[in-house]
Length: 275
Image 1 (tube, rainbow, N blue to C red):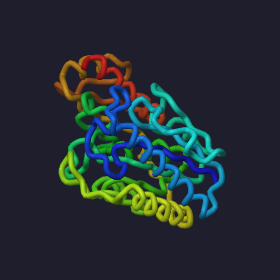
Image 2 (tube, rainbow, N blue to C red; image 1 turned 30 degrees about the vertical axis):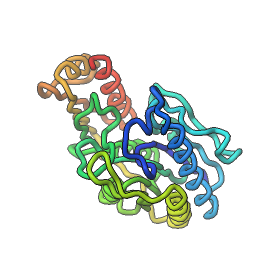
Image 3 (cartoon, helix red, strand yellow; image 1 turned 180 degrees about the vertical axis):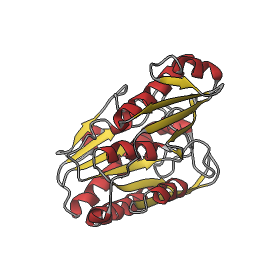
Image 4 (cartoon, rainbow, N blue to C red; image 1 turned 45 degrees about the vertical axis):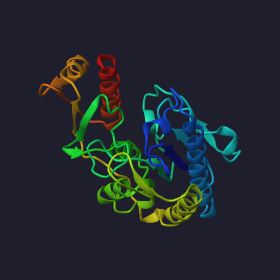
């Protein structure tokens, strides 16, 4: 069984502050939580292999996307590092995988009781919807996987994140590693306990993979994005195919989800220039 893993940091046990996950201007705690992050990903791989997973591709999907400690992962996995990937958090997830895990994920921007909640770029994206479905990172990423027939099997993070995914995809196994208290506090498992929970959930997710199904949006697809500022919408509206729908909002319509996903990526990258 070939497994795809998209990994993020905000949903890791103990994380409650941006400084703990900021690789660009490293706080002393970043090195600590980078290690915990790597250990949670490794626990997911170990659990999946207990249930028969073989090949594993990990996409480091947080911030600059070079956070995982390479030497602490199993020697036979492959890892995608680096930023500005066309499909960002789900780069190279285009078929061939029996399932996917989302490790260390977080809530969507605006979620209540979801530590460090945001959707891709909090300084740019205020809300994103596909076919009027409000999307977290997990939702829109699962939509691209689903287009290629790859089901999401496991999500780990705080309770708000896990339960939000399960409302949209009831077959997904969840591993709750912390209970968020607002945006900057949490009641968390210790790293060792979180890794044990993730390892068990990963094993169960692979065992029950036959019950999962790809998460798909019906075509044609309408992408609606609300930006944080009107200036960001000014720039996003210049992208071919986009129309302005409001002071801070733009829309893109297409039949194919990969095109819609790339359009979304272009939106927040263009918006970041305005920011």
